[in-house]
Amino acid sequence: MVLWSGRFSKEIDKHVNDFNSSISFDNRMYAQDIKGSIAHATMLAKQGILSEADKDAIVAGLAGIQKDIEDHKLEFDPNAEDIHMFIEAELTDRIGDAGKRLHTARSRNDQVALDMKLYFHDEIGQILPLCRELVEVLLEKAAANTETVMPGYTHLQRGQPITFGHHLMAYVQMFLRDIERLKDCDKRILDTMPLGCGAAFGTTYPIDRKMTADLLGFTGISLNSIDGVSDRDYALEMASALSIFMMHLSRFSEEVILWCSWEFKFMELDDAFSTGSSIMPQKKNPDITELIRGKTGRVYGDLMTLLTMMKGLPLAYNKDMQEDKEALFDAVDTVKMCVSTFIPMLKSAKVLGDHMRKAAAKGFINATDLADYLVKKGLPFRDAHMVSGQLVAYCIEKDTVLEALTLAEMKEHCDLFEEDVYHAISLDTCVKERRSAGGPAPEEVKKQIACSKEILSALL
Ligand code: ARG
Image 1 (cartoon, helix red, strand yellow):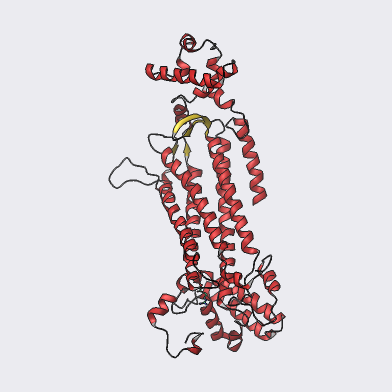
Image 2 (cartoon, helix red, strand yellow):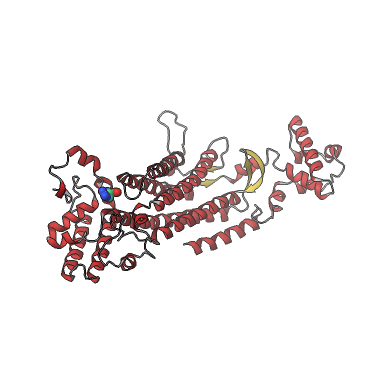
């Protein structure tokens, strides 16, 4: 018999029961459900709504249930409607009438809102250290590659020379923002404790919501009981922060895929983090990064599920909202799996600096520097750009590079060229001179690393 069967004259249809049930996926919130119930019972007793003896029986009973679940002595009943009803029914089985008093001044609507917040607060607590580890690996690799010259690309065309360290530090900035977004999301999870909103319309019992919030580590309570049970902004914010994070990881993955190709050969993954082909013996494929790129779509899908699920719901609780769980569980599981695989893959990857340098030596990556050289000799930039472009065209025709031209050939295009041009357009000069704040010069990248380390330790 279900707990709400009072007004019904028939048992629920078996198929409807299965369709309605969420225990197969919400059982993962059992610890949060128990934690919330213990806080609720403690508050009820303090307010004189529940006797001390009942409260003690409830707390001990719930602790026993948690232990039995964790020791695999108690299995979730697939016929229970959800984790909340399962635990309450099990408690009543164990302790009798006191168990039936637990749901006083509470509804599953505020209970599920609480469980979700507690659960995703815990998940953020697991994701943040992974993000931290990821940033640390990047910082380490960046520090080791402040002199590793590579081409900087726009439109996937060689643009200007940078270093691999400089390139990696761009990702550090992205991931630092991701950490900030997740922390911000966590802050809004914790600032409004929903329990005590009841079904959505408050309660006549003299409850102390602030006390429940304190017991559970929240910084405040939801100000409006209707909003308290209807709000899923935190789920949306989290799915959105995770989607942005995956987008960054996917861009990085895409680059790793390119870098591992014979066309680039900028990176080689450790054998333990690559896969082979069932037919082509020579293949070494970057499957991990391809999967991460693929799974990014899945996390976006979770965000879309949540946004779409919420957009037409009248206040307050609607059963549609049960769909929030699988989407967000999937998003957190996917992110944790992706990032924890990506970290050791990146850590063990070999950076092929020689190939990066070779690629940087081609493609007229120093054409801007050649123009800048002429600017320093007094030519307006627009004219210098024209001269440099003409020299590039001349080189393409002669199948050579700018630094291989003779001074006489250069002078044919502009008489401001002098012997020092060769130094000015050498790859190393081009990198070292890019000293603008945030730029690729080794000492600038070292500053970025130091500054990012400070930001990271202030954040986590
Ligand atoms: N399993 C439900 C959910 O996940 C719990 C809340 C049920 N509330 C209700 N009024 N039926 O949303």
